[in-house]
Amino acid sequence: MIIPQDRDSNTIRVKKKFTTIVKGKEVVVKRLVDYQETPEIKLMRDNLIQINAALRRYWYDLRLDDEDFAKMQLRMLSKKQQKAGVDRQLNLSKRNMYRVFNDTEMTLGGRFYGGWWQEVPKAYRHYIMMNGKPMVEFDYANLHPRILYAEAGLNPPDDCYSDVYPQCPEWILPANGTMRKVVKIALNAMLNANKPLKNPPRGFRKKTVTVLGKS
Image (tube, rainbow, N blue to C red; front, side):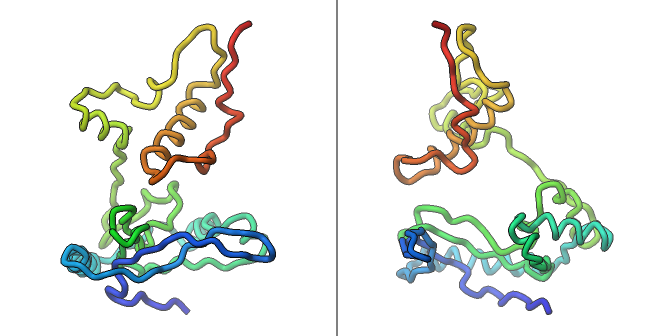
């Protein structure tokens, strides 16, 4: 049985990291914490209630038959979950959004969550429909570095990620696609971190960016 979402329940949330011990090991977990209500938070909540009301006026679905829908739900599981026989059911009634901040001052985070379409694998997003009509997804290339260029009053290059590492003939670099990918991961992690990074960001593979110089 699929249980519908509560309407506009806890739309503004704060999650902070805490260290705990699980099976003798120290792990970091995120937990909801209380925060002080302010006029700004009330305004954010009121705006989100209006957004959710607009979302509820339409029906969102996927242009997939039963077989392909089942395949998609299988892809939504990790390998560990697949081996364990976990049954993942995509709840199409999840249309209410909420925002999650990472600090009680509401200066970090603030991303929107809650919509079922956010759970769909990237390869299936172009099958999303609204009231029976297909939808499209716009991708803003080089978004974060372009914002920095705009703030500095500079014109960005065609590809902000490919131009940040040197093109030295003496150096042996990985293939351009690989190099660009890890540069993008590292740069965006540094831009969005609230403190200096001590470990490589998720998805970063140090061995793929080793630079060798000729002796």
